Length: 261
Image (cartoon, rainbow, N blue to C red; front, side, top):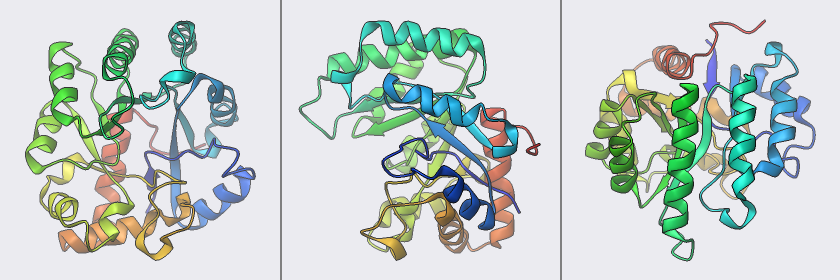
């Protein structure tokens, strides 16, 4: 039973200074592959260095420019991202999207950055990892208007059942994270229990969104089985089944190899 963490910031040195230790714990917990999304251009080198150490580590890169950090992004970063993708290696562009939760972040600038990165993903025929808060309708409208057809994953999905269905029709998987382990998160727990199994993937978003048992702590990829257990319980199915189809979905959506070397 191999689990895949489709969204984990293992490259953030301030949280994961000893990556090998975190990986050893993750492996012991059954996590065989981990996707590392980008946040800023400054972090791409460490991210790519980790993922380029060989497939035996099971780390896969998804460099990108996060919508909340506009002050750290410059026009030439988009050119660098395009060049990085052209050299090969990344399995997706991420995490990209729109965040309307933080009202002080320029929405027009976010939109422009999002569309520019969608253009890069389209040219490279790569999926994207979407960061979306209080902007699902706007993101969906953008994907349709840009005729984006390479799919991806809606990271840490927090929308409605109907919005999830619209993403699925566009070829996206729905990222299920530690939120579903909290009893108070009733909407996403209900959504996760009802979505088609072909659409679901697992993620930790470590070091953020720890499962309920680790509330107040930093999250780690080794906690992914707790999210698996919660999802299987909500869907009233054996966790081995849930593990099999969520991993198969991640491999299909992101073009991951079946096994690590």
